[in-house]
Image (cartoon, rainbow, N blue to C red; front, side, top):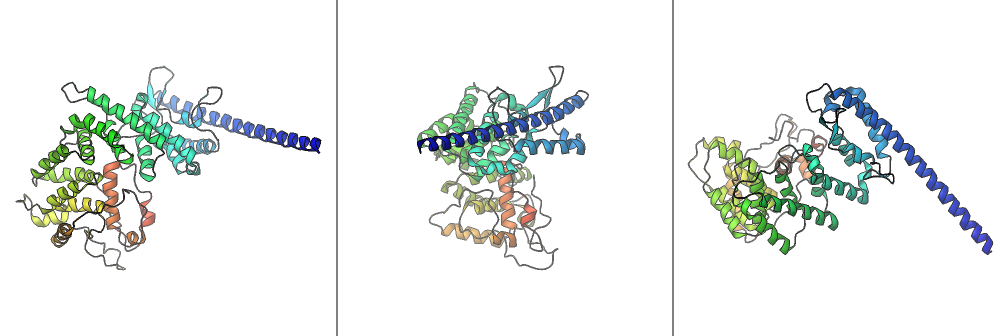
Length: 445
């Protein structure tokens, strides 16, 4: 009996060893195929870039042609079938996605640097794939992207007013789920180090931060902070916050720093904010810039911010444009009402009642009327307390959203204005079609 049991165990062990060997061989074959496809595509890119003056970051889109795009799709298909995608293998060789997400490539001369054209498309395909449904793999991917975002050699990818890449993938993930404690701890540590460095660089002058610094501060609202950590943040960010000019597009870092202090309940920062908004007048520049900056106030879910936005709705200043123009094209009141509708639960709709019709040209009005302004102000004044909506800037549309898309589109506009247009609600058209949709609505950028 014991001998039979021993033979059974040995047989099962042999089957397991054989299965592992077969699996390892299969993985090695897939990796070898990936390396062959990747090197072929990379060599073709580098060869063509030798004679090009531009950077080549969009080579696959505009210069690679259909042949190269087809080769790239095959490469990604092979990549996604390999079990281990990040880091290095036992031989010290970089695994597929570590290679695909290098920030740049160097030409044969050993000096000329060109952007890696595979970075964005590779990550987009990865995030769309079933591989990202595995929570352990998703966490591993985010850890790698956070490390990239904190690595100076990736500065070439940190472009654009909303932080560039890999920020867009990091923030998209953080907006859609709560990160595990270890990822939050790592991100907070890196964020605090960057903020502290920015403070140390001041030396009595405005620091010269790279473009990505302001986008980092948005991640603050997606992390859990202790009272002690918030106290440290307030002390570290205060010098930058007190230099804030909310309508200065070149001071996004200072503007976000000020809002973080307000979110932490800092009275001096809130007083600073109130003082600034009280002196605004109805110039065209102020109106245009308010539509860009006011949405950020929705991040600060505090009663003081609701009162500030209410104050903006109550303004009855002498206007430099006809009042009819303002009600139609956006006044302080209109922009403030949009922000309040994103923040407050139970607030009346800012739009007139929607009447469904079979006429596709009869689109629902996006105007904000004087009657609606009065209705919302009356409701605000009745409230003893405010109940804030969940912090959800990219929700799935509900049945009522599909019938009347106006509020949903407004939220989309606010969300993309804060977090970036690369982090947007996917495929809006598949949710909104037919006579009840706002067919021609295009968010302003």
